Figure (cartoon, rainbow, N blue to C red):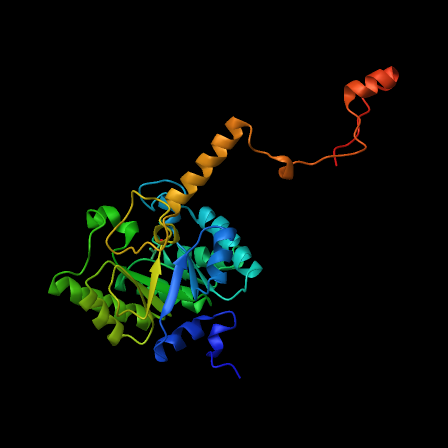
Length: 303
Ligand code: KIV
């Protein structure tokens, strides 16, 4: 009999992720935005994939997540879902609710969440905000869609926060974040992201709620961690915030590989013999013209 816990082998559910907190198992979450990366991330054994609206920055090239639309999220989440299903189909997939898809009303929020599940295959949605969104969370959960909360640095509020700055550094703000965490748990969130808050506060919140906390820039004592996949792979070598650990330097490797290709093309070294197709029966146009001038357009199909 395998000594692995059951949730290691099957498609993970929100219940499994909650059980992991109870069992003291850390949750490894990574973002993905396309099928190829989702497949690699799932193959690598990640427990959960977040189709983050960070795609607005790392994929679309914006300087914030604000321009990301619900249609974009549906498009990318569908791709990620297909990638996971082509792999082991193990990782749980949560889709971010983008700016403007849930703030106006609970009715709007429920409709947006349902589209991410029904049209894109998300298994849960994530939204940013604290106790002021408790009713919205309650309504989405009541519609049958699991919700992940997100407090601390909430990038969709970049203008209100005055930049991407660490949150909850003084006692009053820390207490407010603790109240937000409890309100989100109470409203029915199955987990919550704690972004860029002091490690001591993240540890305290983690001990105070029964649902898993997933940290990013929130120290080691959260129940799990999430990183933007491009950051952990070092795709953009100009971006290295303190909370990111790079596990590869793909930016340099990609530039090196593409540069080698460009040189090969210019030197006529690519394609080589082994990259080329041949046909023993192909008759080229000028040969046909010589043999059968009346039927000049007939050429052999390349094989
Ligand atoms: O959009 C995102 O990728 C996120 C994570 C950084 C938590 O919200």
